[in-house]
Length: 592
Ligand SMILES: Nc1ncnc2c1ncn2[C@@H]1O[C@H](COP(=O)(O)OP(=O)(O)OP(=O)(O)O)[C@@H](O)[C@H]1O
Ligand SMILES: [Mg+2]
Image (cartoon, rainbow, N blue to C red; front, side, top):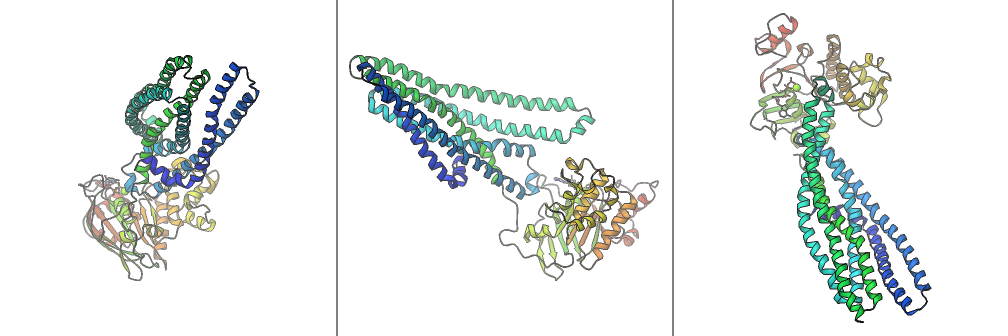
């Protein structure tokens, strides 16, 4: 379906009454406007005959005033719904962007999405406001003026229509080239936005490594491509649309050339000829609008295609429409992994997890250890369903023994029971309290409990406004360790049945780490204790776990509690000795 038609159906139709009123207003104003030249013609004929002209003149002034008033009204009636449409489309787009999952964003450029949501969306307003107004205006103007011309002289009308029709055919050809150029321009704008966004996000790195010149060079290349496309578009436009005006110029010449002799020969009154020329003059505005309209139609089409492409991106939710009920709440759920293998969608040939078999009892504290790149974060992401594991590989076991395949569970319900603190947690440019609670009104008691459990309390005194300190973009105002503990506090703020902590203790000192581990273990051992996964490179953080998983290149190579793992040779024991005595030789392969 043509994106403009779809926009009209999905967003314009509900505002049809405003448009209808606008159409009526336009009809009225154009109907009046077309009378004015006729009146002028009558004044001229009256002057020639020496008749009084006062009444005609007053009529013309009055009609002129009415035309102005009604025209303004018609603009309001069209432009307001146009803005409503843009507003509603932007709201729907944002809501959809929030529903799309990380698997979608992995293949997208953020800057391009921003460019679509800010640049391309304006075409919705232009199309549903000015575009529709122009469409109605142009067609009524042409119909009414054409009708009036036909009444005056069918033969002369032909001399007006022919050159205009010819011009229109040529313009139509230019439009196709314009559409192509416009599509390229929009894609290029997206790439440029992405480059600017990426550069700004990494500005400290760019400056720190004196890489400004290189980044400017890359930017220049994009900027130049954009410039060239802009010039091409401007050229096409400046050639295409004046053709219509040229057409009307030719029409005037034909009118005078053919109509002059007719008037002299008495086939046509001089007044009628003057009215004809005046009628043609009233077409100047609509002809310009026609140019704009054609340009809005093609540019709007290219822009809206990009909006609908985002809106149509499927939300990957394999649970379908009738998700299985969640295994009952209570103690944290148990998990069973059966032959879980997984590769990221952008590199399907390289499995990151291989044949994982595992049984996690409800309420257990599981430590996850492995070299960098061994798949620890990937395992956490699959459990959190940042990405969906293959069906049948992960089973959730409720405290009551009920079982369900993880991917058949309702995604929102599952996430509501989870608390995930990712390895690189994101802080918003808001207050620390808002970052921890992530809801509109943080609960003070729970906030304090979470902050204290995450060992963030001692830092608050050093922050200018304590919990109300705005932490800056991505938490720039906080130290690395503070950022980590703020993220941990966020993870502990909500009551979760499954807590997934991905390397959240790496930037804290040993004392703090010991305290945090103790808090977490106590939490898990409580009567309604959650199931907890702690990923860490530091074995001191894992030693109290009920079970520690040792991952190596995506395989589960060993598991057991701290004592049993120390009892046999392997990566775990080597790493333990290395970390206890940093002077000892590093384990083979180099643990991080
Ligand atoms: N989004 C992604 N797309 C493609 N490949 C990825 C993605 N994230 C991770 N990988 C790859 O998957 C493998 C495992 O990564 P993962 O992040 O799970 O390791 P990790 O054990 O958490 O490492 P670390 O200890 O450094 O955090 C790596 O080889 C990595 O290159
Ligand atoms: Mg990781």
